[in-house]
Length: 286
Image (cartoon, rainbow, N blue to C red; front, side, top):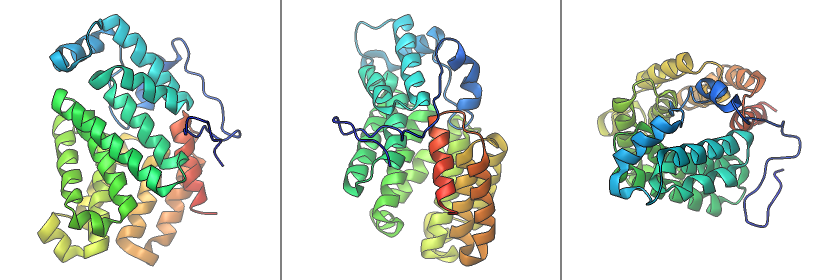
């Protein structure tokens, strides 16, 4: 079980490995750590570009060096599993830190919040922050992807059928399409698109899924293959591979799902998020 803090943020279990991204370690590991979301390394050049793009939407009295330093510290906290600190660092930078703030809040909610109602509220907050980023930084792939993540996880929490009736699935699809239009090699968006197609087909069938929502089993398989090629060493890719197998094939997909979960659980985690992904995959085959 996770350990509760007075602030309401659960910390990583005591058995979790310790990750250290101090100094140059963060930059050296960045490419591997962000193979999934294609987040650019937050150096001063990147910070300056964000400031220019955000314009008046950026918090006042910030310079590129300061923003870069704060983002790097925030991402260190995220990868080391200090999700509350990472979220707060992102929020302190307004739309400039939205990608960090939403990822920290979303991963924490997905794995370390036990209460269903609280988890849904946090995914709603992820969506709200991401929508501010979409308005201020529409050319950023992760502005749209974090919105899709928040909406998608919220939809799963209330049931896909309810989400379809409320039109949320269409919003998820819209955000994923925009993400991939900006960054075709966004592996996590590919993975999310695979799950989108598989969940819709699973709930309403191939015919209605295709005609009404543009969802197809073949598209799920295509996006999944692309994601696995882009992030083969990431536990979440194989975790979702297992989930897609069950959604598309039911009991006939159990062996394939078990193999995918075993693969995810056996990969060496490179940061706290991957450890949580791998732990969850292991729980599916216990």
